[in-house]
Image 1 (cartoon, one colour):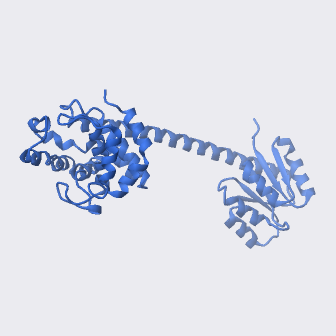
Image 2 (cartoon, rainbow, N blue to C red):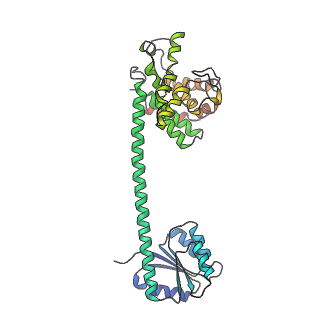
Image 3 (cartoon, rainbow, N blue to C red):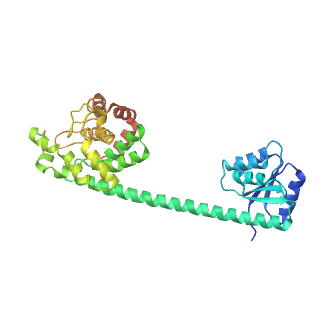
Length: 346
């Protein structure tokens, strides 16, 4: 079975090109010949040949310059420079430095030439097979990683819902908070790694409610001062549950649990942090959590209308919430509405 491959041959002498074509004729290869190296370069860029043969001495652009130009966009294709036997060794060294794979010497000898071409095309074939396998392996790794990521998110979501299982009215609250937070993070320009961690960890924001007595957690109506003091402890309880974990998402969740009830004006809890002293993850989840809580029916309140909840968030920019996050929230009305509809409570 013959070797299949596309060959580009470049030489300003047409007789030399015809000689190369005739020597390769019996190998049934696809050969494209050029007397102008610049035209050859344009063709190489668009056609991705399997082997390039180039003469050294050519007007406008010599063989070394052509090799160097090709290497700017293709690091792998074999390139052979054809030189005279007595050419200066410095020329050959320059060609190697530019990216030449091999040399052929004039006058070309039929058998040697054909064997060299055959070997280089075999190398190219194996090179492409290896690259395809590497790409396939990378794709499989990415798919497996994504499955693991989604299973981890499912696990974190279940853990997060453990804090709410006694309150049947919260439904998909933590899923909506995760998606709201992701949208806000992306819009304000946080890096993908941060956004990913925020999305996976946001469901843990109220995990500390596991430590709050049912008499307070499920009380209909407003909490009194003492009851609210106990309720506020869910932030530090959540932090203590998660903080000692080695997992990235759980540790990130600890920071969110501790900081998502801080306020921009410093009147929040548990630490009374203000403005940018509040971790950005807490500032983002604060907007997401309050917005969704307003839209949800709870034992102590009826659900708000969508526009009224949006107006509350905007009115509290610079008071409860980071103005930068609220600005993103205001510009993401459509995205938030889609999330609200896609994850409606049953």
